[in-house]
Length: 249
Image (tube, rainbow, N blue to C red; front, side, top):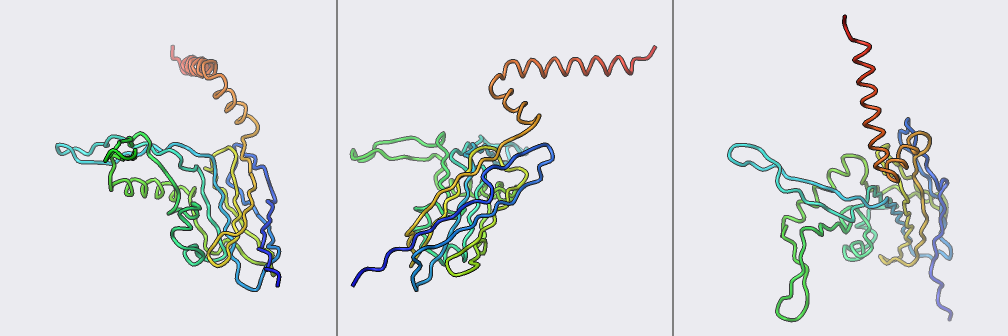
């Protein structure tokens, strides 16, 4: 008796490039996909869209001598500028905690590090260990990063974001907010059976500035010195013109 072939997932984005102009108010990206060699058992689909990583600098308010001051800031790296996980049912009903953590599926399972707060030590003379000065507070700081990103509409989970429109055919819709960072995004489409990821496909999406915004963006990043001098010259010119226009005899 021949073994049943494993199911395979395939998908495509309706758009692979999103153009950001001065009046950009966000966009909706639709993904269509299909499950081939689907068996009698239930299959689950998880779509993870991750934007380019951005450092996040965060500080905590603390009371010092009767004054509220910012604590020493903590810089997190490896945090995606945008993250969305969509699935046909809640993630904790699809796979175990360990599987989701290994795949980075879900906001609670995002690997976000604060490398400046870590050091490597050799303990017991056996192996090097990474020690964080944040200790148990690391999770509180990490939750603050996720909370800020979620409040800005940049992190989200949708346990009903993937919808099967027919046997083996599914559809997912990803909402990009106006604050979504530019760069190359990766969409991972994961097919689960019995709690295990059995097939995976990756697609890319580019979010780029266009028009005057792109010209200024490229200028500022490629030639920062000339861009800075031009900004100073422009500010001086505007200031001189304003003083001349409103000068009184």
